[in-house]
Structures are given as structure tokens and as C-alpha cells.
Length: 193
Ligand code: FES
Ligand code: FES
View (cartoon, helix red, strand yellow):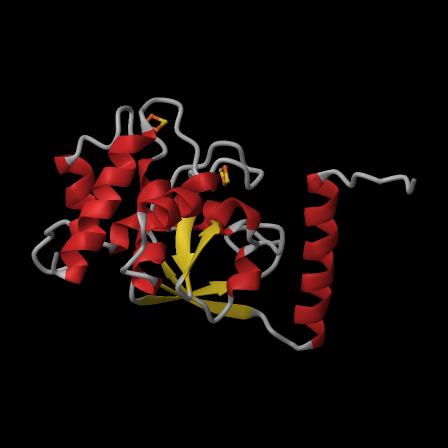
């Protein structure tokens, strides 16, 4: 049997960021642009104060630089789903992405779901309130973003498909049935049932 060598996550991230930093230097890139909740942000990349370091995660950029603290960081290792945001249509764990990797991408956070003019919550946010689909709420933004990405791709999602999509989002408080009912309600409303 082959020996499996486990590389510590920290080391892996450091080696990826060094490669990215070298690539960026070779390409003469000093700035990256990300579109977040419909707004373009340009970041200077480097290791000086105020710059986005090549090892900075998307989660840290969103929370610490842009004050978009709706998405939470819990495990920091891609295991709990609390930090989920939508990137180019897919639900992604922002603690596992380097910000420099996200250059040119379009990102939506929980703050981007409500109507920017009226402040009205999106249907899926409202459904979580109506169905009491949270308790402490720590995991809720991640669950909502995963559900939103699913329904955007497949508004006909069945109960089983919803449960499968949410398999990577952990909640230590509640019965998942409330969450599934809330998402199912939105799916049915979108289908006009
Ligand atoms: S904090 Fe990102 S997956 Fe847990
Ligand atoms: S509602 Fe508390 S962790 Fe999910």
C-alpha cells in the first residue's frame, strides 16, 4: 500500500501563494479587481501595509477589508460551510480561496441578496425567517448562499437535491428540516406551485 503524505494546510497555502506571487510578478500584475455585490474593488497586491498579501484568503478580504461580516468564519479549513459565498454562480467556501485567485471574478455575499434600493430581503432570506430556519444564526448566511446558488441553477430542486447541496453546511443548533422546508418553499414559489 502506498504511504499517504499529509501536507499541513498552512504549508500548502504558503506554497500556493508563493507560486501565485511569482506568477503575478512575472506577469507584472500589481493590482487585482474583484466585483463584489455588483461593485468593483481594486486591490494592490504585495506584502506592504494595506496591500493584499498573496496568502490572504477571500474570507479575510471580505470581512476585514470590506466589513462584509455576514459570512462567518468558523473552521477555516473548508469543512463547515459558514463562510460560503457565491462566485461566478457557484457556492464556494471563502476561507479556502486566496483573494488573488479570485481576480476578475464576480462574488455575491449575503449582504448582496437584499434589494439595494428598498432594502427588502430576498425571497430566500425571508423564507428562513418565515420558517424559523435558524437559532443562533451563525451558520445561516452560509446555508442561504449555498441554497441560493442551487436554486439559481436548478429552481426545480427536489427535497433530496436540497439536502445533498447542503451536506457541506454544518449547523449545531437546529433541525435541518426547517432549512429544507424554507428552501423547498422558495423553489416551489419560483416554479409557481
Ligand atoms: S470557515 Fe470556511 S468552511 Fe468553515
Ligand atoms: S443556527 Fe446556530 S449554528 Fe446553525
